[in-house]
Image (tube, rainbow, N blue to C red; front, side, top):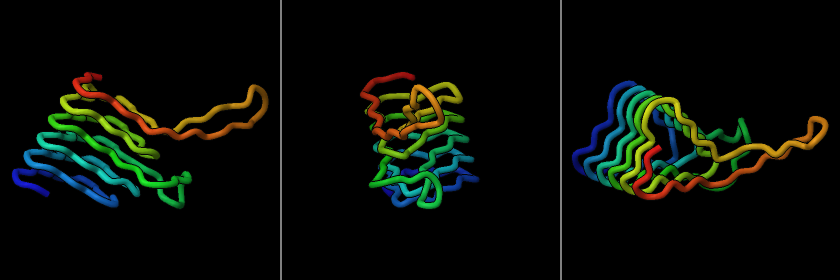
Length: 132
């Protein structure tokens, strides 16, 4: 952790690695859980009441390393859900705004008939200067 870092009250953070650069912050009442690394560049922020999750070995099968990387001056505001089955990179000067957005790194392809389905995983990359 670098200088001028703020981590608010009532957060639950149980992850592999946390790297926070100068002047970045994590608000309050966030849940960040699972075998994932979280990297916040300078002035990046996670607001309040967000859920950032990756299932461990007892839940959905996850393979390899997953990283959530927020670029410089990038913000995730409040009450969003971020699935880190695979890595997510949000570029510099971008904002996940409003409330209740969801970012998923896994999904399913269903057979045209019957119960068959196949899980697909993929990383998510959101560029610089993006407002969602």
